Amino acid sequence: MNKKKKFIKVAIDSPAAAGAGTLAKSISKYYNLLYLDTGKIYRLIALIKIRKKNKLNFKFLKKKIKKLNLKNLQNKELLSDEVGNEASKISKNKNIRKLVHSFQVNCAYNPPKKFDGSCLDGRDITYKIVPDADFKFFVTANIRVRAKRRFSELKKLKKKISYSTVLKSIIKRDKSDYNRRISPLKKTKDSILINTSNLTKRACFLKIKKIIDRKIKN
Ligand code: C5P
Image (cartoon, rainbow, N blue to C red; front, side):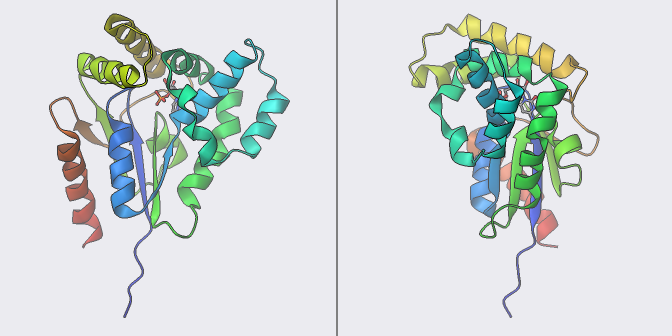
C-alpha cells in the first residue's frame, strides 16, 4: 500500500547571516517542503518605504500584502544592506507585524498540495508563527563569521560595501532584533541549537537531516 507522507512543519529562528536561509533551502528541497524566508517580507515593505521616500501608506501596504506571492520575494533589490537595516527598523512596528502574520501562517499550515509540509525561517517563527512546529531550530554563528559570509554574499552581488560596514550593521541589527519589545529574536527552550561557525553547508544539512529522520522514521 502507498503510505502517505507525514506533513511536517519546520521552524527556524536565527540572527542575520547565520546560514539559516541556506540550510532551510536545502532541507526544504530534500523533504519537499514549501520554503518561506520571512525576512524577505519585511525587506519588501522596507523597499517600498525607501521607494516612497519614507512615507508608508497603510492602505496601500494592506493591498500589496493581500496580493503577495512568493515570486514578489525574489527581487534582488531586497538583498542590499540598506534594505536589511530598514527592515530591522520597520519590523518593530506592531501594525506591520500584524499585517504580515496571516501570510506567514498560511504558508506554514496550508502550503500548496504538491508539498509535504513547510519550512519557515525568521525571528519569531518558533514561538509566534508556528508554535506547534514538528522541528524547531535556532541557527547561529560567531558574529565575525556571519559578517564575513554577508560580506561575500554582497560582493557576489557587486554591492560596494566594506567588511567593517557589514560587521557594524550586523552588530546593530542583532541589538535591535534581540532587544525589541515586540517579537524579539530568542532561542526557545524547545528549539535545537545549531552553531554553524565551524560547519560546512553540507555538515549543517546532515546534522539537521539526522534529527528529522530520527523522528519521522519512527
Ligand atoms: O532575515 P533577514 O536579515 O532578511 O531579515 C531582515 C530583518 O527583518 C531582520 O533584521 C528582522 O528585524 C526582521 N524580521 C523579523 N521577523 C522575521 C523575519 C525578519 O522581525 N520573522
